[in-house]
Structures are given as C-alpha cells and as structure tokens.
Length: 197
Image (tube, rainbow, N blue to C red; front, side, top):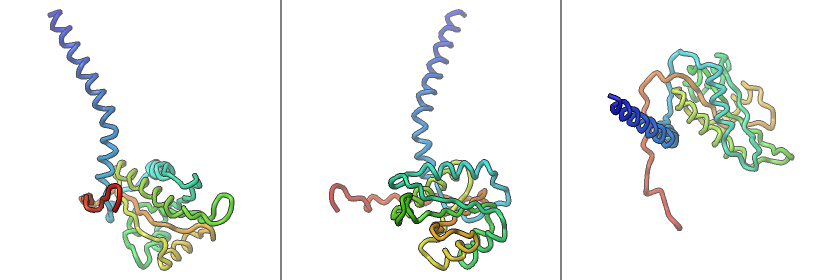
C-alpha cells in the first residue's frame, strides 16, 4: 500500500507538471485560436455590455502599435439611443440596435504640430485589437467603415461634436451575438510571394 501511494503521488506529480507545460504552450495557441475565431457580428441580443467589458476592449485597443508612438486614437463610447440613431443614419442600421457603439477616431495632427500621416494605420491597428478583444470576451462586434466617406463621417462628426483635428475612422457596434455567426476562412496561399513578386 505504501508503494502504491508513492507511485500514485509520482504519477499525479508528473501529470501536474505535464499539464503545466501544456498550459504554458497553450497560451500562444489560445491567441492564434482567437485570431482565427474572430468574425463580423451584425445582430445582437438586448443583454447589456458592462462598463468593465468596454474598458477591457479599450485597453486592448490602446495596446496597438503606433507610428512614432503618436497614439492618435481617440474613442467615443455611445450608449444613448438618439446618438446611435444619428450614427446609423443612412448606412448601417445595426449600429442603432447594438447595446454599445465605440467610435474609433483619430487625431489628425501630430504631437509637435503638422499632419500625422500615420493616424489611419494606427486607428486600424487599434480597431483590430478591439475586435479581437471582443471575440475573447464572447462579445460580437463588426468594423463599419466611416473614413474617408464624407456621407458617413459628417453625421458622426456632428452627432459626436468632434473637434476639427479629430476624424471618425470607423464605428464598431458591440453586443452579445444573437445568431451563430461563423468566421470566414481567408487563407489564400496564392496571395503570398517569397523574396520577389
């Protein structure tokens, strides 16, 4: 019986160590799985999105890379129905139906004056981080274009009271998915070139 206890203890210790090693390699796999699971979700339940969840999304967005570390992104979180209706006006009714909408905006001037030519790339990176964070939280979200379409930008500028040096980049409705949306397989090896075109 004594030997059986020793053998079982050693066995469980080995399983525990193996589980630990597996868990540490699973971290990178979890990131990759989340990237491949991301999908565009356009319909939502009425369940609310908590302030804590919104803050988690915004922290992820602000962890994005930024040219010259300018961090031009600015975010407007909208819950008020009248404002969501104005943002949805004319092009994306799903914006009006989401529990919360995050408008990703960019400061178009640099920290030391002049134009920040990287603001759209930086806002794109922030938006992707936000979408991946939504997927990780079990929320649904979709990137709806705003910039450079004036018919989409102008209603956002007006509804949100944006200053002259801040442009709306995109609008991200966020909520709990009401359907069973699936990610698209976008892997196309034919789009890859090595060394030269």
